[in-house]
Image 1 (cartoon, rainbow, N blue to C red):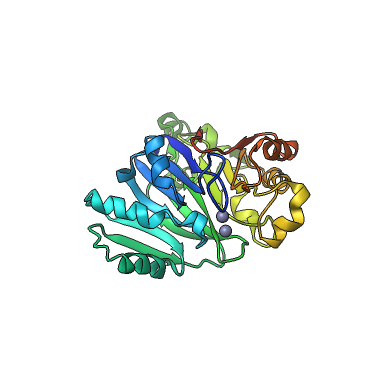
Image 2: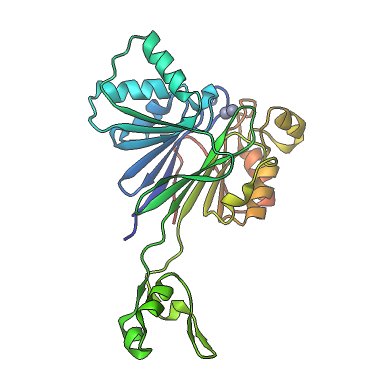
Length: 306
Ligand SMILES: [Zn+2]
Ligand SMILES: [Zn+2]
């Protein structure tokens, strides 16, 4: 069974502060009926209303790191869900410290939340699967920034592969052979090898989305996001400011383009722009010079992951 549409909506794409009509980092990933919120910068709720995202449908929040531009919208968002008297719990994954942060905010403001929060503090040192359903899985992986920071890879799960009925009789397939074909192995008959794809139905290219929030391109294991369909990668600066970018543990548009090419992804989405850029076209042009299929993220961008 397929998960249905996989759609990315950018709620905010600026870095440290809101400006030039751009809010700080926040994204929505829609997976059929499931809605994930990736980071929750200030203004995320306003953008949800602007872009008609139903916040009541958000089941899970994935927080990359504890910097305010990715997090300051979260208490307000939880407060709204509580006021709306939502019954379903909200699941939050984030770095160690997120429980203390939320508890401090809600205690100091004497908030009485009517929503249950299920908070998972994570600290993966290598790529680690944190969620698995029948349709998709989420893997968290460490990236390289000034504080502990994690990227998230959301992947559609291989739909069940079925063996064609006609092939079963044609080749008098045994049960062990059928099991092997379903696992993607070829059929071996004497010295003849028959490609499993000729005998099976239902295998199709799988969709995936990798979210790399604030990070440098080096200093972490990028192999986990090789061949991802759509990669979001930060491009805080143009390459002429590479030294500054590295001092602040950020990346440049050129570096993101080069990395996307090296990883063999299908599409690159850029964002987390420094406030010094009113016009983001130069950042897009620079990334495109190294990786043609680059899209500049902007507040309100909606992309189908096909
Ligand atoms: Zn940031
Ligand atoms: Zn940061």
